[in-house]
Length: 180
Image (cartoon, rainbow, N blue to C red; front, side):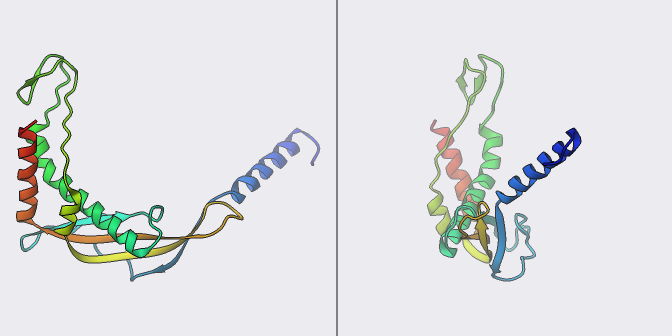
């Protein structure tokens, strides 16, 4: 251990950095399906030929095998479909007014906000998606130095859904909101 205040401070800082860097996680790309796609990680192409394109993904953290990663990514794309359909619905029905005692969606509210929750069967939407393209990465992750390596998959899918199906989901959301 060096003498003097400055020498001790440098030694302490160097020791702390060594300890912290030894405990850092390690994430290494082991294999991938093909070069990353032109559609990017989250940017779908514009609608074409009556189809709307959606991007779904799973992260390397939650998928232990390629099949599970693909299912999670397709489910994520289905949530994107619901979100896209709900954008118009939210604009028409989910009015939030911060004033106390206002009428929101035809109901008087004494609270500052009125939230709306609608349940949608995402699994049924997954069945209506068409897989257009996919990209996966196999990653080796080590959470800390000396820890065991875990192989995980990161998966991205580009799916499509017919515009008519998206409109059906939108109408279904509107009906559910009207019955509240």
